[in-house]
Amino acid sequence: MSAKPPIFATLGCRLNAYETEAMKELAETNGVENAVVVNTCAVTAEAVRKARQEIRKLRRENPEAKIIVTGCAAQTEPETFATMSEVDLVIGNTEKMQPETWQSMGPNFIGDTERVQVNDIMSVTETAGHLIDGFGRHRAYVQVQNGCDHRCTFCIIPYGRGNSRSVPAGVVVDQIKRLVDKGFNEVVLTGVDLTSWGADLPATPHLGDLVMRILKLVPDLPRLRISSIDSIEADEMLMQAIATEPRLMPHLHLSLQHGDDLILKRMARRHLRDDAIRFCEEARKLRPEMTFGADIIAGFPTETEAQFENSMKLVTDCDLTWLHVFPYSKREGTPAAKIPRQVNGKVIRDRAARLRAVGDEQVQKHLQAQIGREHVILMENPHMGRTEQFTEVSFETAQDEGAILKAVITGVKGTQLTA
Image (tube, rainbow, N blue to C red; front, side, top):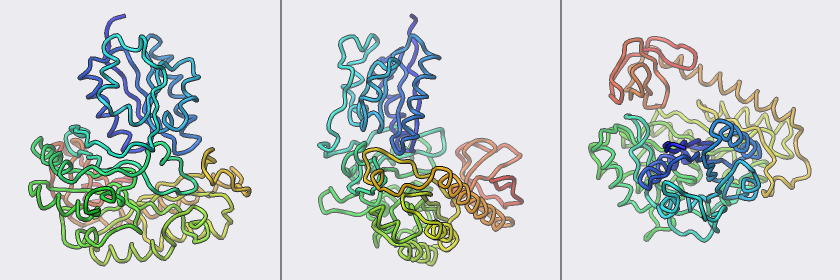
């Protein structure tokens, strides 16, 4: 068989996509060939099912390649993939980022390699600041944190990612300087639980401290974006950055999950409904152009129609724009899976559809409000860019990819603005 470069398939979150880029570099450096690497997600039982489906498809398409499975699902249930005839190697979330893992593969790897390489991720105390050159030529993602110390009852991710670990601020700043020198105009800070950044570092700094340090020490960085935060843990310095730093983009994705206090308590969340509303109001007072996205789960066990309506109402009470709606999926190994009163699957799907419909209305409301306004736009490709609020803008005339330009919004086409 002639040597072929490895193929990578990524499922799940933006952090997984970031780590896939780092794995590509590790594989290339160590001469890995004739391999298919599947970076899995474990957030729901459906995500694991999709991972198995993807593995089977990739095996059919690449009958002679070695199939390597990694990611959160490989970490939380390695035996699920080790028993698949299509799979040659299962490696954990820590192992996938270690150079020695890829060194052992080489051009003719997996001869005597142990088939399952998944260690106890809870014993990991550090996370590396992996240096990658971002995606495309416009926006780069920098991992500043990994893992989670919280134990929400619906979530398996701490068991796939381990406890919270932070990348030191100096390492983060050095990487961002490197990316700016390479021409990136926007950097996104990413992690599993971003607002826990710094808790394990000397002097226990907060995310706001990191944001302010980046903006001070990298003055040539035009745009800094935060991927997702737990609003109840937003620190005073982060709020100050929102109020005073125009280079911090006015878009925050919030981990809200629900709009009913009793369900939030059963989820073991750390905020109540009024906390979410108060945060959005405060952030908008500090930065009137602020827009919000949010994760919301439909059909959590015991959820009544009235409790679901509280989630529906939260969308407008917080004036959320970009919704990520998750139909609740029973995940073995989580406390929520043991709650006796599970919601009927058809009801869950119906509620998720209703939430998405409200989300669609909010998107259109936001889009219509932009007509006639001038926006500063980062071009992702010759015909599409994003505003500071992360709204897509389409251009009939080709622009320079990666450029930042000003344009007046002339209309709306689907879920995009036009200029």
